[in-house]
Image 1 (tube, rainbow, N blue to C red):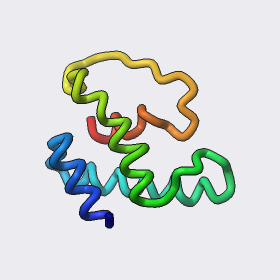
Image 2 (cartoon, one colour):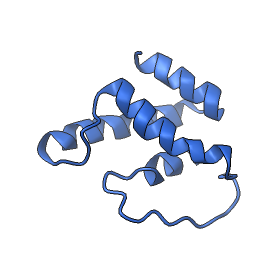
Image 3 (cartoon, rainbow, N blue to C red):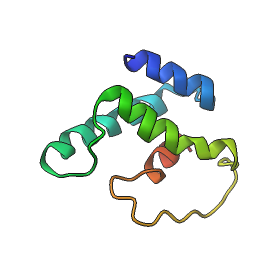
Image 4 (cartoon, rainbow, N blue to C red):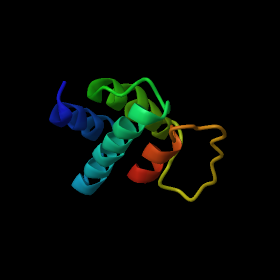
Length: 91
């Protein structure tokens, strides 16, 4: 899958209607990819795997928790920022 197909999957599954959110996720992916070259944040750095195993999996929480409401979440030991950063970007 390419970037547009992966973004379409996120749009359809999580009802993301803001291109800026999709662009921010891609920027996060690029930063993760580059940083993982010199620091072992994650071994999952290929585009499709990162979108599915990092972004998609992180956002699945929104299917059971209403992330549009004000709430407090604790994400302990996230390392590369999963699931907190994708949730924050989308929220």
